[in-house]
Length: 201
Image 1 (tube, one colour):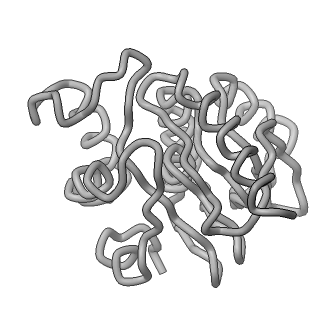
Image 2 (cartoon, rainbow, N blue to C red):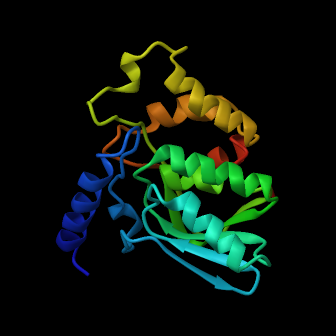
């Protein structure tokens, strides 16, 4: 797969995700992996695997998953480059937590932006060797940048309260805003993953 083709594919996904409020997908060229924009969910034993962009119908799809596969204990994220509906993503992460499910990023897989938020829903969270956890700032569909908002703005509070509920320090939100602009990705180091308590092991 050529880097030129991969860069063009990433641009198409980025343009799609920028439409969603407070979401933006970023370049994944550093990962050297391909990804699908359509969300795919499949079950193997007590594990449900998720791959693709998280959409507005994620809560519905997740509810159907649990209804049809009640034995699922772990949500395995394979390659999740972001979401187009942050509210739906956060609501699903909260549902994962309420159901007492665990989350895992597969070996050499990755989660970016909203994918990270979904991962945080797990009671126990684990990250496979070589997996990537990418964060960046958000940009809404009107072009509003978080730096333009007061730190006490309700938009910030929505994220901060979510992270605190998931056992993640508030600093993680402010860190993600500064780590990379909305059109780029910063992949966390093992030390940062530890410091921000993303992996519970």
